[in-house]
Image 1 (spheres, rainbow, N blue to C red):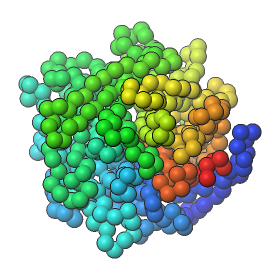
Image 2 (image 1 turned 60 degrees about the vertical axis):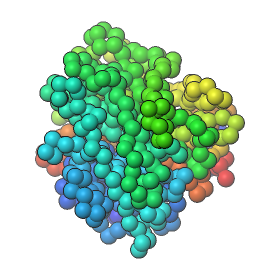
Image 3 (image 1 turned 180 degrees about the vertical axis):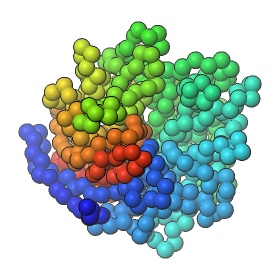
Image 4 (image 1 turned 45 degrees about the vertical axis):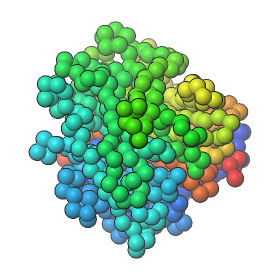
Length: 499
């Protein structure tokens, strides 16, 4: 079957709370376009002033916002910026790539970690010299940060730096990642948070040493399952910065106690990262707890809690293969907006919505707000799971536009529904009910792997401050045997109330 690379379709959507809307959806990168496709592709991206930049493991491609055409004739190798600048420590980025558009500086940021060549792990960051990825003057300011000093315990054991996530704020680029004990089945044993010197990185100067904190501190020498893993740093949406002196905030899940009995939790974790570049001894990293409505993490497994595989496909009846919901953590992004009279943070994750043994999953979202000098507190939350008990919703990413409309994108799948893509949108200020709509109905299953990426991405256009852009994966044809044939889909839409 010949597939049109730039097929675009529009759906006219109506609801009682919003006027007619148009959703435009088009093909992103797919497995046929990259030299060495992987099962676990971590699709994510961001919208900038002129293009949308998409990442899959381990390639990136940009698309013009006007005609949706790709900027480069083929996807670019993910390690390309560091190879161009002859930085061999960063030639080995194999996954967990992150794309940001630094809206306050109008620059692109690509980052990822290496896999421990010669026992050394690096976090690699590339900052663009321009906001225009089609410019003949485009270059990348590249940096490598050795992680070993902050991932090695007192006994010399080096933990694996997994699932790094990055956020941009005026005080720095803020990084959070998990520590895995690979000798104990990739057991999560802690987290590390680091501040990177954004000021110098934006002007291609030598960066100050990164400032890092761990939890536990010091790093553990005995290994138990860490229940607060997978930090999500706040990432500024729009072009209004936080107030001067505002600390960076991160969030993480609080998984149920690992007692093989309890399945619910009623809190998430809020981390306050204060960075002082002039006097690092004054920097700090502190955790507090935020009470939220009770939830069970998606696909929660009492015996092996990090194993979150339970999302069915039509083929599951024969293959017994199910998809990983990655329900044991909050999902990026922690979208931050400064509205002047208040500051708002949005984050989402996959939770169980089924009852009486039904593992059906839905989307839980939280809005935290700051209304003064106090830290963020929960302002409102909700769970998205309309319809019957058989459609699973998972892998969400959330953002909000310049007038307080929220949108969350996610995948859906079920025993009678091939994996597809949906989104929901609502207004945070008037408390409207989320309205769900299709982006792409599924056509095929992933029959040979549980991996469904590890995250997706919803961002908002920094020019009009209204248009949402979302990326995730799907399958146009069944993936069977040793084949790898995933597709990705990009979509954009805006609510009529945003001008």
